[in-house]
Image 1 (tube, rainbow, N blue to C red):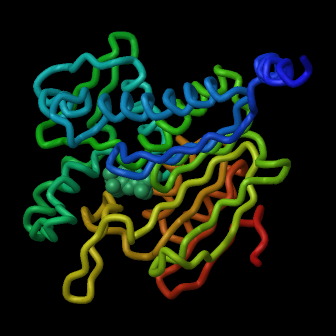
Image 2 (image 1 turned 180 degrees about the horizontal axis):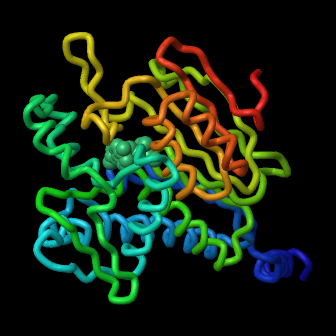
Length: 323
Ligand code: AMP
Ligand code: MG
């Protein structure tokens, strides 16, 4: 009798035991970059649902804000906003308003209309605008050319030739959105990464998550390890999208004042409360350079920075200690 009963008993016990809590991990290529999700869930079904929700949210934000996709609302703005106000989702209008506030805060170092000239660079094809083309496009770079009506949820440009691109802030925004979603699903330990932008919720096995900052010339070498709990981190680097020509590096972070790649730094990492903030600020500080950039970081108070200068020297804001 006992021999026959044991398997039944075991089966019963397995059914009655709570489902296994475990880590869920997945990577995907979305928004032209590597997305990585890692989270802890009390049961496997919730964990998988949460990971699916993160990836779906990344795809949704990309479909709305990508400048590569002609059907995105952002592309519709670029196509028509010089002629008429273009109706968009409130969420997109709000992110454009937020980008404008960052432009004010950074003295125009962050400016989504950089794309008025920026679209003439093709880093894959190694092509760039001539000095004449840059000069002709510079007048269209000014965030004040972008007029948002929050009530009507419309965007228009006050002149011809303006283009916008949210590449400096949209990944961080998507990460924040994804983190909000998994929070609503009851997830208390998670890391969501989109390219150089990550947000961390809770700890990992009772310890901080460790995020490495890579060496600008060697993806295998780490220049600093940052312990993180409930925080965001973004890195902007001249090694992400670029080509070298005649000893010059032409890369994707453009100084709105010149229409050319910002030249003083190799990378900027910002640590702060949310990923929209850290994403926007890492791009901004890269353009501002070490002095003005660090000054802004110190003034804001709720963020920290690790800056790699062109000569290789690493600078830390006062909230961090040099190793
Ligand atoms: P990130 O890697 O977050 O620094 O973002 C770099 C991206 O930001 C570029 O690929 C452009 O899409 C965009 N971008 C470049 N220069 C600027 C700028 N001065 N202000 C705002 N966005 C920019
Ligand atoms: Mg950024």
